[in-house]
Amino acid sequence: MRTLLILSILAACTAVASATDKADKTSSPQLAAAGTADFKAHVLSRAELDKLLAHPERVLVIDVRRPDEVTAIGGLPVFLSVQVSDLEKRLAWIPKDRSIITVSNHAKRAGKAADLLASKGFDVAGAVGVQTYEEQGGTLTKLAIPHPHPGLAPAQASSR
Image 1 (spheres, one colour):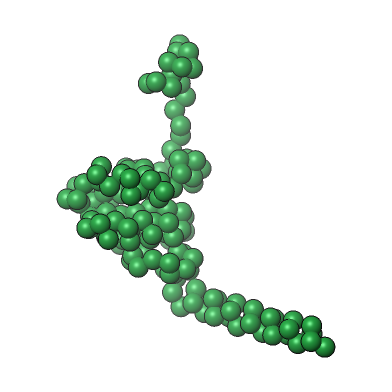
Image 2 (cartoon, rainbow, N blue to C red):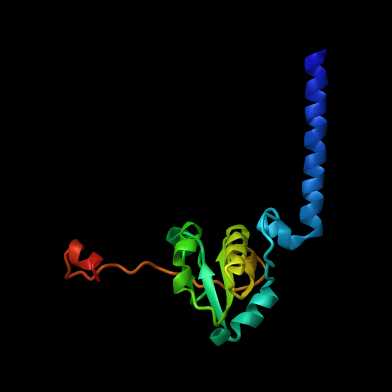
């Protein structure tokens, strides 16, 4: 009897949590794209990102995904690639004279990166998920890893 009561309570809690999560995602597409609100940064819509990218001299796009994610999924045509785990160590490389757009697949890592940058005094325009951007009609650039020059030995090719 006690086991049945515990299972009933767990089932009720799960149903409430599932309904709350579904309502949150339905009421806020930006949070649904980001997964959860683990960050404070604004999640940019396709229209907002396109407007910012129309003036490339004013923005810096920082893609915080792994290189394999960028090549498999695609990304924006010009960006600085710094994985989230390395971002704090690379702050000196990031110019402060541009608005920063952080990029990940669904904006969760990008949101965390945007929060870090904002806390360090950078002007952050927002975070974007490239897969969400593409779902909203945005166009991604597909990237290919260049093959080494056929006349070079592997050691020479890797040093180029």
